[in-house]
Image (spheres, rainbow, N blue to C red):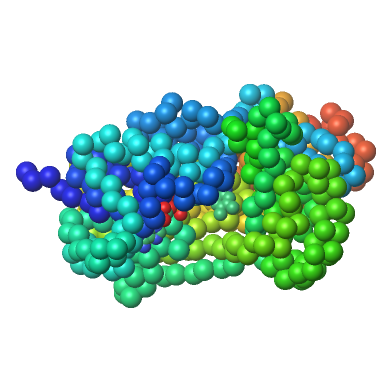
Length: 454
Ligand SMILES: Cc1cc2nc3c(=O)[nH]c(=O)nc-3n(C[C@H](O)[C@H](O)[C@H](O)COP(=O)(O)OP(=O)(O)OC[C@H]3O[C@@H](n4cnc5c(N)ncnc54)[C@H](O)[C@@H]3O)c2cc1C
């Protein structure tokens, strides 16, 4: 039997992992990336942008046969460090003792996966190859090659792993019955930096994700191994305050000084950076199908761009790869069955995490506000500690329970919320929440709702 071939468009983290998976199943893979090779050209301009990877991401890498290489240099973050506007600091753990999400360099993990892909004899990488056209009948792809015209590449199958602004997905718009929606969030973002101390140590607590929650906007900071922090300011596109309303230097300086006073001594030129950067939009993309003619598929952000408020975009893309990896074996390389099984398994989960991520903006940006909301979280945490068999908090289901699909986490989380509303409606709950009868009532309600299943 001749060896079947794949074109993977996009050498980001998901495309690189997909190439490894396909190669390990015996396919010959061409991995085509539009940008220069970051290992040879400093396309990140020396800046380390970090993201949070959690159990779903690590488990998915393990399922494709990668574990320790990718985790090297990752920094565990055990809790949220909440910076109040008055400068006071508090901690909210992410889960049980020892549970952590991990700060990893987005470029670093991408490069590690590219290194591993290139060690596979079945993978060939091609940089500065930008996809311009795709034939969805034949999987023939056309690339514009930097300084070298155009190149046509033939393969048996192709995948678009070319990110939130996927060219493959745009080309699929002409495909019959292709459903598509793109929704902008009210917020945009810019990245800021907290440099390391002179001795290379971190200027804020290293093993935490720092949040300055200000209800309608927030600043977050993730630690980097070199002692710096990558910070992201999420702020409305328009309204007051917003990227649109803050155009003059004094207003920008006043905005930072009044909202993030304790961060001012650490942030590197926040006002100049704010003034010089164009805020990036945040948007959701929903599409279906994710495969065309059983020849071409979509994966990662190309199939489901979500917002970053749950820190799950890359985790979800890695999970796509792990699911596909298992389906290739299960369906014995029959792509007539693999493509539909893959998209039907992953689409409900991608939709669920997209929804959860949108909702999580409030959770993050209001961490130090709304006392009733905080009380609800406190009651849930206490109950879950006493009855782990009945109640896993939603955040833990999403982040620390890869065996629970995102869609199930969303469904159970909504049921938990219905139960909690009954508790929060009890008279004088603010004063009585810690008393045994409250936990007993919650136990009754939770047993009714979840007892059978558990
Ligand atoms: C501000 C922010 C914070 C985030 N934080 C987190 C987080 O904490 N945790 C988390 O899990 N996720 C996070 N994410 C999401 C995460 O970055 C993405 O989900 C992840 O990068 C998706 O990987 P990908 O390979 O699918 O797409 P990408 O990383 O976008 O890679 C796509 C690749 O395709 C290439 N490409 C594009 N067009 C073409 C073309 N025409 N031809 C050839 N190549 C092309 C691009 O150059 C790129 O290398 C965050 C995202 C943002 C914006």
